[in-house]
Length: 118
Image (cartoon, rainbow, N blue to C red; front, side, top):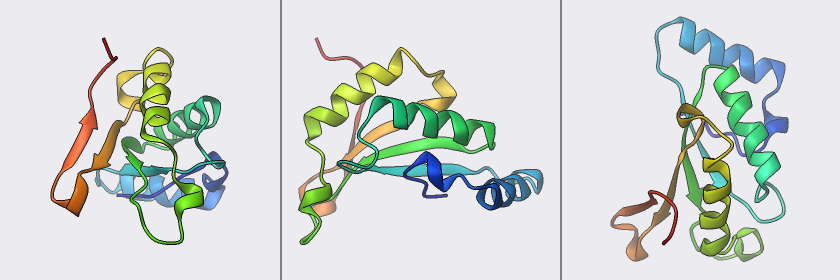
C-alpha cells in the first residue's frame, strides 16, 4: 500500500519504485488522505488518480482525515468529500476511482461512500 496525497509526489523516483514492485508481481494500491487546501480539489484528485493508474498503482482509498489534535486545519468537511466523489464518478474509470472512507467514532469500523445521494 502506497500513500500519495498529491500529484507532485509522483516523482520519477516514486514511479520507478512502483513500477519495480508491479513488475515483481506485487499488487500496488494507494490510499490518499483528503487534505483541506492541498488536495480537496476535483482537478488535483483527477490528476493524482490518473497518474497513479499510469504508474500501475490502483487508487484504493480516499480517506476522510481523522480528527487528530493539531490537524484541524487540514480536515475537509465530510460533505466536501462526498461532493468530490460524486464529481469524480463521472470523470474517472472504475479502476481509477477509489472508495471514499470515513472511520466511525472510536475507530472501530470504516464506512464508505458507495454512490450518489438521492
